[in-house]
Amino acid sequence: MAKVAGGELAAAVSNAGGLGILGGGYGNAEWLAEQAELSGGARVGVGIITWNMADGGLDAMLSHDPCAVWLAFGDLAPHIAPIHAAGAKAICQVGTAAEAVEAVAAGADVIVAQGTESGGHGRPQLSIHESLAAISDAIPDTPLVAAGGMNTQVDLDAAHEFGAAGVAMGTAFYATHEAVDSHQAKDRLVEVDGADTVRSRVYDHIRGPLWPEGYTGRTARTTLTDEWAGREAELAANVEPYQAAHADAAAASDMTVRVLWAGSGVGEIDQIVSAAEVVERFDAVS
Image (cartoon, rainbow, N blue to C red):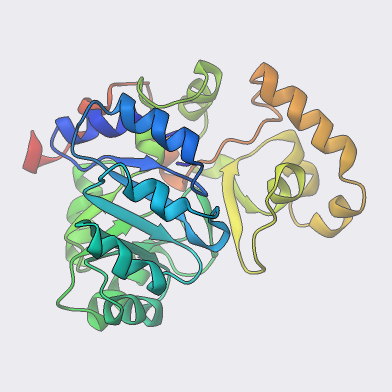
């Protein structure tokens, strides 16, 4: 949700009874300052991608007094103590039971289990329910949250059965009025279903940055993924024309070419709604 989950969206989620998280990406200080102001003083957290974090990125986040910091990808452990020192909770996203145990040992307050159904970057490994089953056994005393294909109370009930205390949602909140993106991008979320998503490294090569080996990104299918998914090495050898084409498509919000991160649960999205309407799908806050 980097630069899609801005201050208005995070505040709307929290004000409706959830916990809104600013999508801080790699820790751009200027963007974080703008979006923190737009959150209007709501109780929100902020997320950051640790493997490629900007210098001073964590300090920039903590300067806005978030209630929680969500760490994802890379070495999470060194950042937990500064988060606690700032009075915030440390939410750590993991993909395996071993990573969960390591994060809890380092002081994580909440663990997010990411399944392969998630939109955006991750590792194509276990489904969310397989991941939850393994991780909940490994860390029985730490709150566990499910991420990947989560949209409704039915999804939450199923996650409960596998040991989760709650769910984290990205694509569902992308399809809201408050999310930061064009109407063309949001309309595309309504149009596609789970079969129209694909995991690849195509957009790593085309728009960067190039993530570490083993990571792919789940996106809505485009003409570029149709042509190059599974052929990324060939793409990398002649990428410049496609970089230019993507830049033009991004400027025009041409969603046949432009990247759109989306999870496999996107098929449950049939209209653009308010963030509050998404939160109110769940019994605990309705």
